[in-house]
Image (tube, rainbow, N blue to C red; front, side):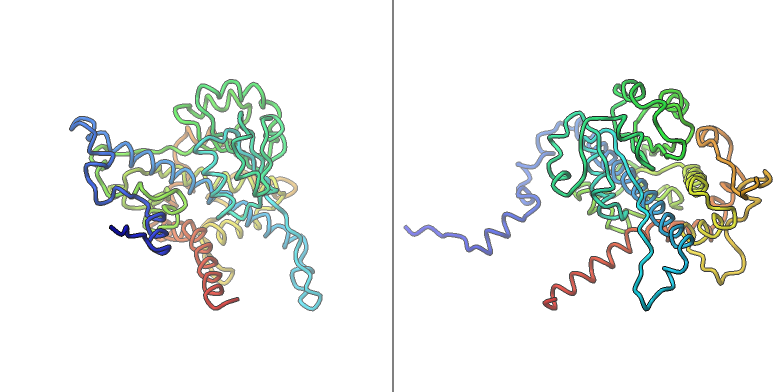
Length: 372
């Protein structure tokens, strides 16, 4: 009897199939679960949604920081920006990023930063207890080693992605070494920001708070997508935004106050770059809310940020992010949360980080199909 041998094309189709048990219910994961265990499947989607939200929000902030550094470079080198005949480009002022802890979340975050946030491999440092397992990242040019102090002392944006049980050790190693201008972004669950402040010795800490409603557990969320695939799905990306309006439609959501903290984090970052108050306001309105110079009424005004008088350099004061996180909503926070037009502008720019990448991706795919 002759045996049918699949063609190469058919074999490739089988190999590329994401789930070979798709039409075989008895072989699928859920078939082996009891009814009580099946009730817990909601945790699978929730865990995936939290990871997607964490990576999307962190990527957004890194992309904003990179854009601000480039704007600042152009402000400081206006002649280069205008020099078209000599084709002189403004020198790149890169954002240096560090990640402490590179397990599942840390490695996914690293990939998102390299893909969407304009972070180049040589601008990313990772400290992990097992750097030898990060071969893919090292092959791309990322510096991976086991030295928490080396990373914490040499970056502008530091992500902490360790287990809560490891935080004390990490704090002992990096406390006192974190530069004052460095933003520490904590993705450590179950550790309050007051504890982080004590362990890390800085008030420039940002920590998202993820929440969910039990009745939303069965809402649609495609947890079969990888993290990048979920982020590139605009309906999912929009739900990771802290100002997403339809909380009842989200399996996981972020407290709206986090948007306020994002703005003050960006203001602190601008101040660390010695940008004066008018420059900071222009950057906030353009980068965060998409306002052009021709628009008369700015979204954010100086009096909504602080009532403290300017210093001799006309800089904003440095804001204690840990105190803001534990305090009531500020005037700025109330405005961005309660003004529907402002919320819509924020969401549009937030999703724009990924949309810009997708446009670039479609452009290059189009060039390939045309043989370029």
